[in-house]
Image 1 (cartoon, rainbow, N blue to C red):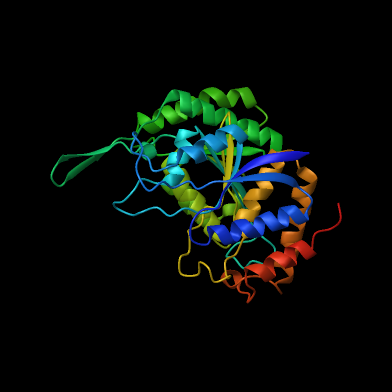
Image 2: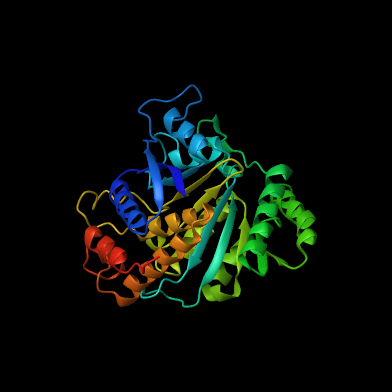
Length: 335
């Protein structure tokens, strides 16, 4: 089956890792017609966003996108392209599987946890203003609709993927109304999925528990800000953002992306590690129903990392992007 997929190569090392992933998917025999678009506009739209209309329209039309890393200014500059795409396309669920990759050194073994993050509201609504000079107010938006929607998504994901337990992460002991509504919404949904064990943890305790014993967790369900923080924390337990994939899913479209930075210091030098975007593309193949190809690529990726002969510098090797890519292609078993 042929698929039409939007490709947003991204910035910095993005085009290099995107090209590597395209080559691996092609070698695996996956038939994809790529529609390559740029996401960042050099001028703001009427809504103040810097996302190109072409990128949004392409994802809406094709319903599936693969996206490389995009830079985001700190304390000023243009709003985040990543956040803008998720909100504009209503990609309300962020899915971040965190699992040890064979051969990649990490502080823990046997980590296998999936973080499901509500992706459209919370403090990431971006509703901020200066009350008076020196005083800024930022609004935390939590709605029953969005919280209920992400709860159903998480429990359905758990059933589909054979997961047994979900922890809802919150700070409802302090933010009794906002995080309280998040919890109340999930509690209303949980009884509908009685075969999935449901628990709750305050976010600060959850962070401590994660770094003490990550193996105790199966799935975490989080509002936007906590989800952003804890998904990166979890990635650090298995080797960092360069070895985990990510998906943003909505009712009308899904976007699979690398969540690491643009690494401008090595951009264009052929040193970038395509693993994160490749893992995201494997999630994309599962979404497209190409499960056989997804498992073949996954197996090849794990073999290359397990052997450690052709891995990139960030995971302790000496290979460049091209050598790593060819090693994965060479490890693909016949379909």
